[in-house]
Amino acid sequence: MVYLTAGDPKMSASLEYISAAAEGGADIIEVGIPFSDPTADGPTIQAASARALTAGATVRGVLSLVSSFRKRHDTPVVLFGYYNPIFRYGVGPFCRDAGRAGADGILVVDLPTEEADEMAPLAGQAGLNWIPIAAPTSGRQRVRRASENGSGFLYMISVTGITGVRKSLPPGISTWAKAVRKESRLPVAIGFGISTPAMARSAARHADAVVVGSACVRIVERHGAGRAGPAAMRRFVRALKTAMR
Image 1: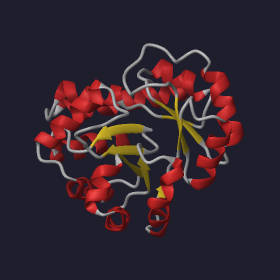
Image 2 (image 1 turned 180 degrees about the horizontal axis):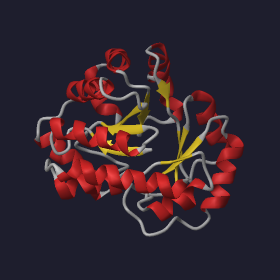
Image 3 (image 1 turned 90 degrees about the vertical axis):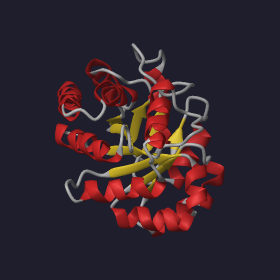
Image 4 (image 1 turned 30 degrees about the vertical axis):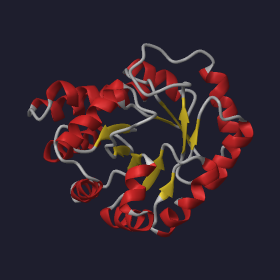
């Protein structure tokens, strides 16, 4: 699974990067909704949101981007974001419009399991999977509850901290992953900090899927709207898939 921030560095270029990720073999693409005050994201994705917002990204624009992507590819799309922009847009209208745009799921980072009823039923009515989250601090009972309230897959955060490129998987990841998989009725995807093909291969031993975000966003940061960027994204995603296989 690949994460990319919508609208970074601008909407037209963002579509090419997301398409390249699909062409490189991503099984699911997480499309980040830019937000000015992210709480779970490290400097790389924070900067991507800032670039996108400066270029004029909006929630409506993100949904339009998904619609344009859907005309090219059938790779599943999970919208990844924070509650504030969705609340301002309107939770019901957002779910409806996201479903119509062709999104397959929604992950709201800062809407805890205990408050998921504010949005999860409306997402389900719109045909969207409600992706739950588990952190190392969650505890088994809360992991079980999150899994029971969600669908699609469970996003397992590998560290107690923010997103960002790291050099190695955290110690104890195997034990934590086994505990989560035991409590989850859903497939489990590991994310946060996985940045190289070798790390993706190692993480894949402990879960059903691996999410790579900041390392992909760095490719966008490096190449901008240049024509070489999507090709670099395609190569990187292929390298990830090859290593995991």
